Image (cartoon, rainbow, N blue to C red):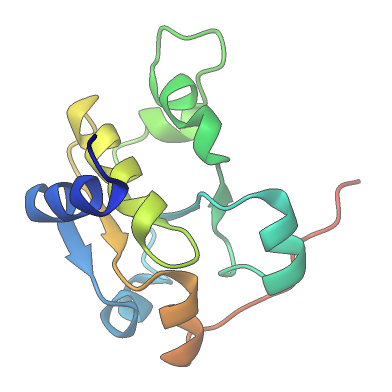
Length: 130
């Protein structure tokens, strides 16, 4: 059996990992898109990084692929994508997947949203749908 810890470790060895304390400096850069992979319930409970694009982990591949009927324009832009989840595991796997799919400038917050908050990163309430 292949264990998730091993998969995360392998992904982290092949991708750019940014500690939350360093990722904070990227927040207001116009060519950077923060991508929140967490479940909607996590966003409602914990808050979000201001301006982050929400992409549920289960939709990532479908939203990245320009040939998918579910493709999202944001992933076709020439931007740097910084993925994050709560603790850095889902985002490590997602960043590796995005890189494998051809997104050239991808990274993840290695200590996740938890690390972001601990580092004093800005947070906001999840915007209400409307």
